[in-house]
Amino acid sequence: MQTVNWGVLGASNFALQHMARAIHEAEGARFAALATSDAAKAAPFQAFCPDLRVHGSYEALLADPGIDAVYVPLPNHLHAEWTKKALAAGKHVLTEKPIAMTADEIDGLIAARDSTGLFATEAYMIVHHPQWQRARQLVAEGAIGRILHADSAFSYDNRADPGNIRNRPEAGGGSVPDIGVYAYGSIRWVTGAEPVALSARITREGGLETFAEVTGTMAIPGTAAAGGFSFRAMTSMRLFPRQEVVFQGETGLIRMTGPFNAGLFAEAQLHLFRAGQADHIERFPGARQYRNQVEAFGRTIRDGAPYPWHLEDAKGTQAMIDRVWAAENA
Image (cartoon, rainbow, N blue to C red; front, top):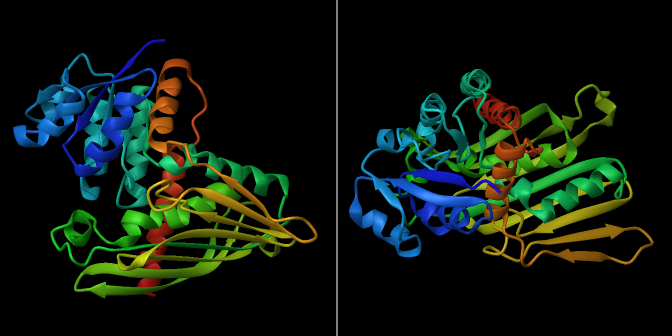
């Protein structure tokens, strides 16, 4: 198996705690280089990867001929810019969500991907988790009948950390850019539906959005409106932590626990309830979605294997986010 040599742009805490370690541990991957000008920030990465090359700038890492793929965990407003730069440097790219701040920006990324022939996508790790793959399978098989309602909730409280990048609106902060991609994109991925109509109730602190409750109707493109379903999606950076997703059908219900930070917030579980049948619970205690994501990315660039989340999928979620902002001002 050909090993994919990875470089990471920036020594973010998320990269340190999750993705850099996933790259280091993934089969067929090698964490080869890190870009940071701060030796102190590089040290904890080198602690678990002693052979790591450290470049003093992002440009230097992109110029490294020994790097095949780049992971971009920079602040939200820099994602599209450095995805393009990495593609221009001849690297495959996996960029943290949201990969852009507007859907139109993603058009430029799609064009750059297609013109270079390289693979670039958003790091939407939940689609690599068996809990979500199972939910999608059950819905597609009609296990709960026609979907009538979907409900997603994702909240945490970071008011005590004003320096957190998520609390900086100029850097693409706010609950919708940070976790709306999960609350909205997960419903889209499981059901194949897109919003038909939506309304939004949003709370702001100054210019920073800290709470959003979005409700409306979704339907699978090309189907009659009568085949759609209602939805509610809540995100907040000022509420007690909560993560839950429910798909409610004509004949049953799927409830997912720990759906977004599986194994950290709670054990990933899928509860299936159907009339006249015993309640069914599936647990996924050992699944590692970040490692799965790295390995799937490697199979795609090596062998052309199918990948479950493309730039077009990310654009669909971002288009929904754009509609949320428009609904706020309607």
